[in-house]
Image (cartoon, rainbow, N blue to C red):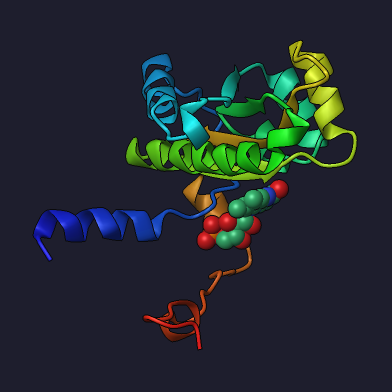
Amino acid sequence: MSTTANEITRFLRKVRQVRDYQPEPVPEDVLVDILEVGRWSGSASNRQTSEVVVVRDPDARQVLATGGASMASRAGAVLVIVTQGDPERQELEIFDEGRMAERLLLAAAAHGLGSAIATLKGDGPAAVKRLLGIPTERRVRTVVAVGVADRDAIRARPKNPQPRKPLEQYAHWDRYS
Ligand SMILES: Cc1cc2nc3c(=O)[nH]c(=O)nc-3n(C[C@H](O)[C@H](O)[C@H](O)COP(=O)(O)O)c2cc1C
């Protein structure tokens, strides 16, 4: 494997959920670059149904935190993914939303920022739609928090290495069994 491929796959393997952030804003040009990566995500039939609302206001981030994305109150910005909410294309929309979320996470990490995915729960989606002026028929569930990682707070958390299954249990060569 080339050095470059090795470096990139190491970077990809090391991206972890960051739930603690320093109280610093994320520069707008960095947010735009992260959004550009998201904009180039592939989508089913290239329908590009995912849109993003960038939430920086602390009061609005608190509503996101109450709605299930607890780290939103500490993040520099939260990227709320909005999809069409077409019941006939729900499975594809959710797949597209997942791809978008992962690219936003990775782009934030490429900028040296911490990032986290979170799912709004209970009344969270309805409250966030009301707050941000998103039509009720749209789907809002997944958000991506980004910010300067608070390394001290992360170190102070109980150790949770989030182990992964061994490769043999996850990858199957040529046949499943
Ligand atoms: C679809 C999805 C939803 C998630 N929702 C949340 C969430 O609401 N809150 C949270 O703290 N983490 C959430 N996570 C993060 C996972 O808990 C995390 O990725 C997993 O525990 C592995 O940890 P790591 O990413 O640090 O390796 C979510 C991840 C995915 C893929």
